[in-house]
Image 1 (cartoon, rainbow, N blue to C red):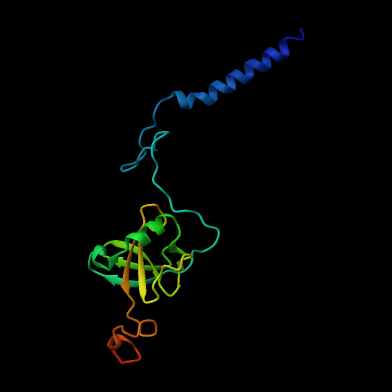
Image 2 (image 1 turned 120 degrees about the vertical axis):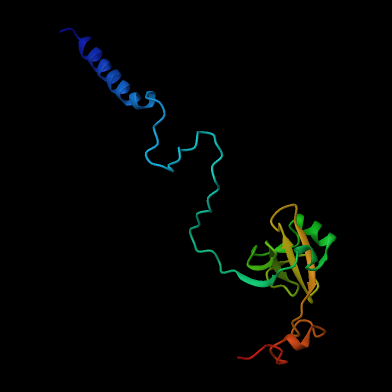
Length: 170
């Protein structure tokens, strides 16, 4: 036996293993195993977006406003504040911490007195509630509405507050 026989045998043995491993790939597409079974997506195809994996639990979120009206009728559109929001100078501290639900649209909520509001320019009115649509993008829109809580706005609706007995007792 010459010294070249061992490397040649090893190379032939590796080629044989490679061909055995490639045989299933060369066989073609697999048949469906059962009714309703779907083929895997092709490489490069757009896959569905999965929720983000977070290390810690997400903070609790509160639904503050619920209405069957359209969100465009919720309050007054604030053009200057919308520009500030797009520049990230007037936005929510924690997006969607407080929520407003208007006929299928969910808006973020921040309060003019400072709760969940990042306002370094001090442009907010203490007596307003601010609704943010697309608050984390440059297409942000801000709407304002009066806060009816008498602790913040004494001119608010006094009859609908717990102190005035406006809520129904069971």
